[in-house]
Length: 451
Image (cartoon, rainbow, N blue to C red; front, side, top):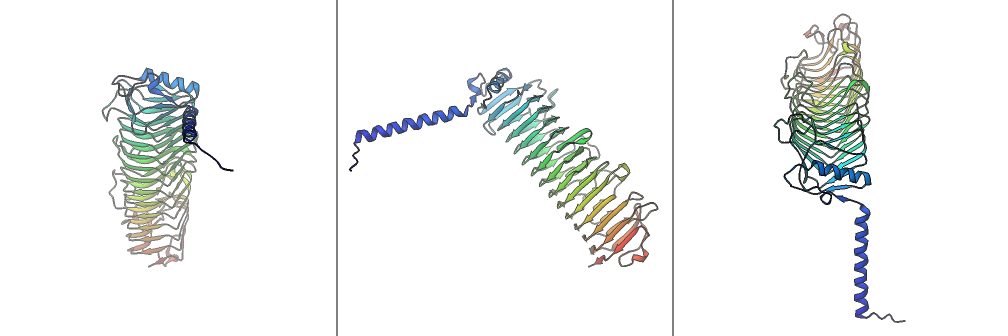
């Protein structure tokens, strides 16, 4: 059987195929269900306040549960309320919301749920103060707030401020903000991942609570740099990541550099896990766990530059129980930015119920490891650590009422004194390496070596 195809039938079939393809494309676009804000009364680059028009467009799209697309352009807005079920999409880096006069915020989700923001740029009016502006985006008691690939720029206050919110902040940019990049209080499970924060006035990412309690936030793979302390203080400002009274927080895989005080500071947080972070050029202690903390895990972090490496302090305020393992700590040579009570240029310091094992400490000129301070020492184990290039390899408290320390199988290289007893700030024994019989009764020495 021979198949015959005329020129006319061929062209007819091609035209039919083209029509079918066009219909399929049209159906696909229709199926996506996007609404265009410019077709709903919102005008790009209008030079006038677009708040009323954009508020109506958002409410309309949320009611229909259809995504709303905001075309590229500049939109002057203020105090927009985000409705539940809103999915607002911008052209990334090009759909810009600029704070209008007397704005308290640009966008706010107050008691709403299931909101997704993508590809938007929220911008203040430079670093000049805007009376009443507290944050570019505000979230209060909202569930499932997702902020993805958005930019928060040039504002005198905070990029994102949250209270009682669950959700996700992913792949966003925060730059030139006067206070904080992200400030979350009383989170209900918050993912903060793959964001970049640079040149922030008082703090990068803050996870806080007014009272002690569960939080469960996850801070993963963020890049944080150039964090200042415009408001001064002695460490409450100027930190890359700061956790306060929030339990069960994971801080992992972050790259944090050039913070005025600490790269990571955990205050009063229980079960805070700080794992696998890179911390460079901190102004004070690179990694700080203090006050009423309990149950910290600090493992496999790389710390370089600062006045000290890791400080796990405040046994007198209830701070206890910590595992410190596998950290690389080097070049702690900076002067401290304030006249605090701590010794300077040490590698690692612990006080109570701590296991310190497998850490590599190098070029911390003063002391490699400090176990306890005065009577603030209890149940410490320091084993299988390597300390190189410190004047004193390990200092351990030997004052009356100091607790027990087991110092086992550590290796010291280039130390003038490998292991010494201290009474507060003053060395009170000669080198105890190889002389376990001369150690005070609260100290157990075994198998330590000098290279």
